[in-house]
Image (cartoon, one colour):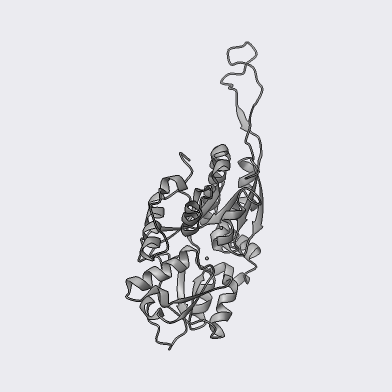
Length: 321
């Protein structure tokens, strides 16, 4: 299932006497502090956005001289076109970034966010029991509900189905917001759904079956989503990006060290029932830029016939972050 307002980070020198002057304290040094930078960030309400909200709630953004405004979005694939106008940063996916780049949009990845691993898969494809759908190869001729048809999840599903001998063109995708997919499956309007957490766990607890994750056939670990920005803005605001990444890393440490408090924050911004927020599996967070994973996604899109020509993925990431 994504012209900027240029926001500058100006370094202001703090006053003080020279270290060699008679009035200087022993060991005193001049210091500098970045002025506060305003950031407008778009997110979708899922576990992927937990570090963002922890950083806001725990003051890590403020500590790093960032004044952050968070805005909820419905569809991650709609966000790239908003960068530079409505938002400075947004959660994005590799397939949307690659397509934006090939379409001539100046969009770059500035930070990682989550990776999918075999031990901790990011998403599951869920089907009802007793329908004869045992793996991705059985999805031919079926209808699959997806949070976004252009994003990595649905592309991964098509790729895995092809690897298992099914023509991906025979799989019909239906796009719907993640919270509505369980009802789509229950009502029989789709034969399977690509379910993020917490919906995957809720569906399997209700008796449905997971046929696996759509990413393991590509690579493990594999970047599943990350933060993107308009390229010109990102190049002009590398210091602000560095401070954003530092705050997110602090948030990831907090999530690991204070899980109960973190899950309370998760419940607040997702409006999940408290028992669900307390037990839902969390993604693996990784804020490194994994350019090699973009190369893998280029290969996937080409194999599915969704991309022609060569793509220089080095131009799709912020240089020397």
